[in-house]
Length: 144
Figure 1 (cartoon, helix red, strand yellow):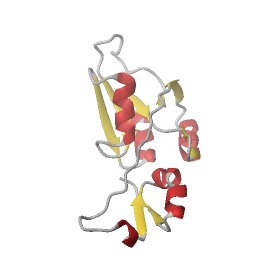
Figure 2 (cartoon, helix red, strand yellow):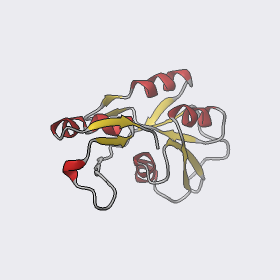
Figure 3 (cartoon, helix red, strand yellow):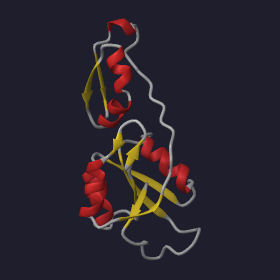
Figure 4 (cartoon, helix red, strand yellow):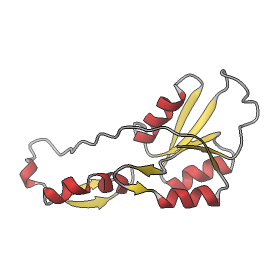
């Protein structure tokens, strides 16, 4: 979902440049969703370490727009982002559904049967909870 309190000054047409804040590193699903929703021409996605910092970037005028997940099919509503939306007085101006495909990665030579712990973003762990449980894997939350 894309949120913004107002259109940035000077942005009135298709040639306008938009800076879009998202939580994560380059290559994150939110960056992918930004470009899928808005295209690449005139758009620059800027990653932030946390949702708090991404929301703050739009509230303090560093970025024009914000794209963050609000809900997902497997993990449910992301309540922290709903709370941040209210705290920063932002409203939803667009929605994008992005199919998420996770991959389990390990060091070369690792065997799947030897794995004990999976380190990933909390939302990814929630989305993969059934798989983790059925394979006796413990999830450990970490942000990108």
